[in-house]
Length: 306
Ligand SMILES: NC(=O)c1ccc[n+]([C@@H]2O[C@H](COP(=O)([O-])OP(=O)(O)OC[C@H]3O[C@@H](n4cnc5c(N)ncnc54)[C@H](O)[C@@H]3O)[C@@H](O)[C@H]2O)c1
Image (cartoon, rainbow, N blue to C red; front, side):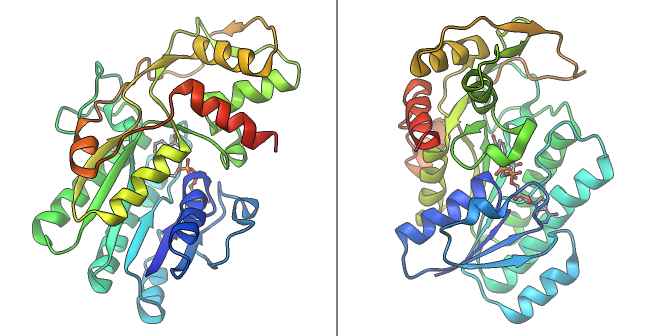
């Protein structure tokens, strides 16, 4: 099996690269990244090749078609900073490049497993369903919604190619540290706590998110690789927890007593409550999240302190 992972130096992509090598030792794995938000240190221990390039460069895809062959493309590269407001750059990077990727997949007859986002739902009332409405509130969410449209249109014409889109909710786990301020709230609060600082939350910490642990995300990607299906799926736990609860769980696990410092949210748009309906992924992929917030945090702390 020949596997291409775009965004493979990033949080989710690098975890997938290493998981494929663990699960399929004979697979040939290639990471493609421009190292804009990813980091080479995420790839320490990765045995495959790294191709440095920009997914929005059509010449790169011509070169790859000439020189390589792939059976599967995990497409995880994107501008992942949801506060970026440069609409053209966001659309060219996240949405337009997806067309080159699908064209290349058609050329190679490769399966595509790509990253969409819960950002497509904006502030719609939970639980969020794939077949329900989408109402992105920022250009990041909009670019992901357009990716889903591009995928659906492509599938209408090319049923022979399998394309699976994952609307990830809030993913946390090892490998996200290099994302800096865009790393998960769990990681942000963890670093504040272990450096002796008070955790800082937007007033009043009651924003709720469906947090999903990286090991459950890996499981979803491995299921997508095995199953002969196409479609768009929410990948989450199906439960939402507040930022205040994260502080509670983390301080208990780390045995640190603390007070929260609340401040005004500086963003015009901020998702207040996300929670997925994961019945479609359960039914068609056999996806079942294994990690509750408590279990995920426990496992994550173990990994961070080893
Ligand atoms: N982490 C989450 O909670 C979450 C939630 C929803 C969706 N997603 C999606 O999952 C995917 C992976 O996210 P992540 O958390 O690993 O983020 P990340 O920022 O760690 O990874 C993205 C990777 O893409 C690379 N990249 C960016 N622009 C590129 C370009 N033009 N050409 C080549 N490489 C480029 C970056 O260098 C980075 O390595 C993204 O598509 C993201 O939108 C993530």
